[in-house]
Length: 244
Image (cartoon, rainbow, N blue to C red; front, side):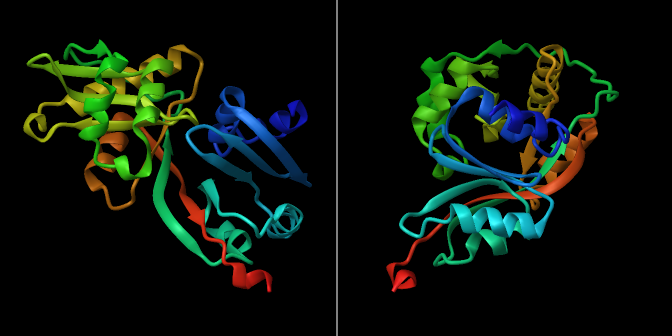
């Protein structure tokens, strides 16, 4: 395990999701082929992470790992990898595509004067019910992310009006502003605050945004985030006819 972590650490921006996941969740198994790595672990789901820059290595890795008997969930997959992963499956069941951005160490953060509070998990159900991407996660995941922190909110009328957290792989996310409170600078204040917190913890702030979410991309870039790559999360389907 430590040997794999050392290998991944040679390209910290590309592998930051996987490194964080390995530090914080139960790892079921790992596979390596040259400089390519596959890691399977459990957070809210069974996830498979892959780090690779070589098609031949990834092909060999998938051939050794492939188990046609069950569906799988893949995380932070670059577009070129999909043809190797999907070979022998019935295709994709669900998918979320994003752009990965990170905050360079020399980017300056201008803190806002908007009062923020640390979020309490007592509000997890309210946040889940009002989160626009809840189809991709479960309510217990929200509670877990609040409990493990960092998680911040802006309150209005004794309820969260806007909030932000980190995902299980360390990415900043779950940012949401209730419609009636948009345009007040809450999202920017939250993003800057959590980015500053992560920096002070010695971590590189990074996040994922859907490519057609122009407002969020503009916000992140205005704070100083720069694009690294296109990535996706998806689940594969298994068809029994493939094994006949």
